[in-house]
Image (cartoon, rainbow, N blue to C red; front, side):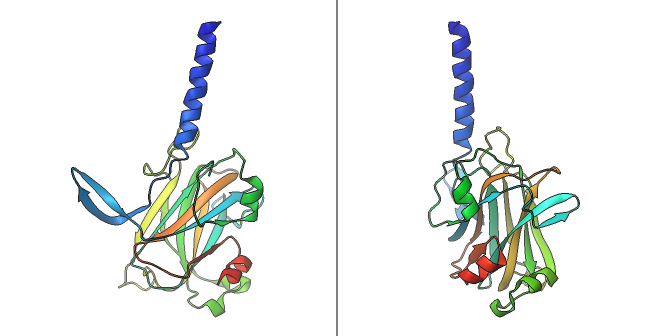
Length: 227
């Protein structure tokens, strides 16, 4: 009996440790690196904007290639040399200072649901705040700049798998379609495998320079309120 109890306690400790690990989020480092003793580290981004949300089945924005995609819209107010995007699910007990909290997140913050994140960074041809509207966004041309499924730099999920996502994109000033200019962007997210997307998540957009006025929102209506 005592042996069984010890086994159960050990299993519980392992699950608890794995869950705790899923809540340890390191500083968001960019593409620029430097030597610190024997190690090479990525210099943390100067500007990081955070969004806490909750994805629920049936609330997807679009179905592409059989996958249910959700979008977070991002207004970038200045030219950026580089952008980083990362997503973690679930948020768990991770504390994020200054994050925008969606109502859905507040209502479901205690949820244990999480999903295998898959993210994209897209840029639209909308370059003026005055041109942002529901109809304009639906008719906009969107260019996918980067995408990521699994990143070993991100915390493991409670399952023990490294299924959280991170991408970095360097502006290509010589190519108008690939340059990080002022304008409307969006983070698309879904799961790697076809299926439902459900759970709390943290999404962050970061840059190596200060970009005062970056706004992140789940809907165009909320985005316009923040501009």
